[in-house]
Amino acid sequence: MSPAKGLDIGTSRIVVAEPNGSHYHYKAQLNAFVSLPGSRLTESGLHKEGIPFKVMGSELVVYGDKADRLARVFCGELRRPMQKGMLNPAESQSLEVIEQIVVSLCGQPKDGERICFSVPTPHPGAEGNLTYHQAALSGLLEHLGFRPKCVGEGLAVVLAELDASNYTGVGISFGGGMCNGCLAYLGAPVVSFSTTKAGDYVDRCVARVTGEPVNTVRQFKEESFNLNGRGANVLEQALSIYYGDAIDAAVNSLERALSETRNVPKLDKPVPVLAGGGTAKVPGFLPRLEAALGRARLPISISTVRLAADPLNTTAKGALRAAVLE
Image 1 (cartoon, rainbow, N blue to C red):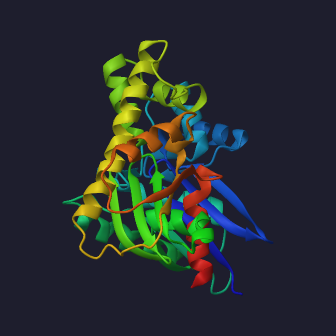
Image 2: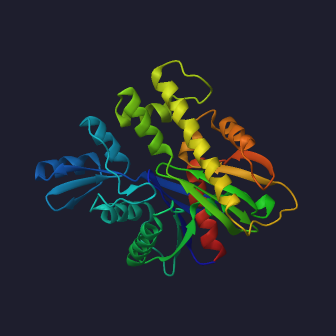
């Protein structure tokens, strides 16, 4: 078998999956950066601290996980190469930053190495943006020496863990910039759907109504929040409200996509729903999703609703499986 990798290029994180015997090995970095004024003194300090950076014009661009640390030190906001699941048009350095992160995670490709990377399902009106996003990332990976192929993010979730149902079911990736989903039948995508109400949406809305910085909201959400009902303070209450809104938006998008599609297969038995992505990791997420699906009017029956075994790495794992199957 020729070498292969799976790459989840998400708005919040970039994750690479590689085969490791009968298991998988994952590496990840924040898909973010901060810019510092260029100076030899600062360059020397970054080198001594082991902080990865690249000189871009008159700036020192610090990327990946260490960018978050510097943003907190300087009380600034992280800059994102991607926005709402695709390349951020407001950031001219997007592709350069993503290239640096991919190289740090993937290293130099072996001869003929395949890499399968995830792409979102565009929301209405953004189809042209996806064309550019997909072609730009494919060109970047080819430039690095890989043989790239893309896979829809929702389908990647199905491929990651729904082998017991012969890759038939609904996979939903609750990410940072978007929520992407897919109904697949025997590994083939039937209906794909998406919404931009995802992790970043929750963070921005909560920050706006509470007056807290976005970084503070995100840190509290990832480290302390439990989606188990009415919160004990304003921050928890706001997170609960907007989490519910994001979950409802994903289920409504699934319901709408299925109702508008003529070729939904007549399935002879209920299908599983699998949720992945970092936004789905918060405790109490699964009961909220089950309740929202229970209220939906779907033309398919659902057997089980479960959280992926490793939500942060699910899409990369599915992308790797797609690369290997090719």
